[in-house]
Image 1 (cartoon, rainbow, N blue to C red):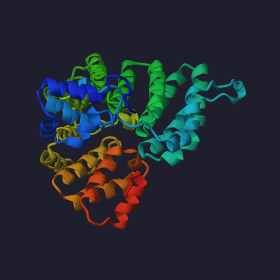
Image 2: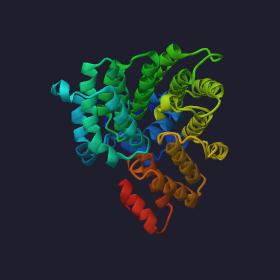
Image 3: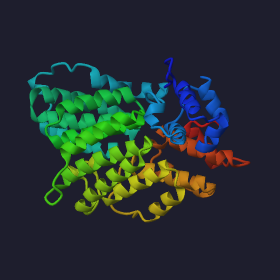
Image 4: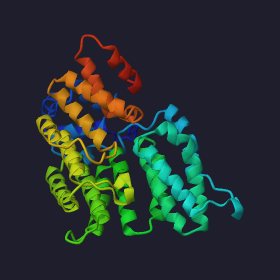
Length: 396
């Protein structure tokens, strides 16, 4: 979404650049961003830019990314996606009619239905989720009105739905779902888990300072005593630290990013292994998860050699982290190969992700950018590349 205010990113960029006594060419050399792109931004011809580009410009200017950007930078879902998910968004906001006691849902029934739906969420099976999720949301609403125990189930479902809406770039719907989930949190660990998902939403929207503030505040509240902490407590605290680190590294605060990642590592060491408290894949946490995020931070810092070195040491077996961890990591690996001019290896990684998560990959603009860089370096486009480009909406 463009920042259409009078003080758009181009005006801020030009103002800070001139104060630093840098020419557009000088900023281009320092940041690695093309002169033509900088010129378009400053002249208002291009009012959107990706967070990665904004971070490069901010780093070259010696300011935080937050100071340079305003609002979210990632595109919202396209019209086709909005239309496909309309029944789910309607179920998030529409009142549920009284069905009468004889047709009221039960705790057992909703719990069983939610358990059955979890593989659809964790496996990114969006086509299978769309027809069942509206009814499940309405039933969870009806149950929560009748039975206090139903609030926990509804809150968990709303968090999952918010996570799903972030995955598909329906950010306003995600905010609505996560706000309602927070209201249903039955204890501080539920609240911390929901806050972690909300921080991810803020990161996707480019609201870096807010994401870090929320993560640090919630992490302070959730910090356990490591010697006696439960896996659920370690997961809640560790994830909030990872969100704080992710926000800091994107906001050109590398020391803070390193410190919070170190604390997350201490939680992972205390956990001992990858573990999902209560079987909830969103709370899966441990040494592998932290290693994936360490590699992600290295990619944000544009250290491709370190990304590939870290990736080589991450075990392939064990608990499969969620797509926004494992597959996001593989996109970083592909990007690192591109930066090393290993385009065949990069495309091979993308093919593996596409085979594993065919409904997840088209929602990742990062993947589209990587594929675009690969194709730009080739004289001919293979049929496999053309097929992937079509799936990702990349003009070739």
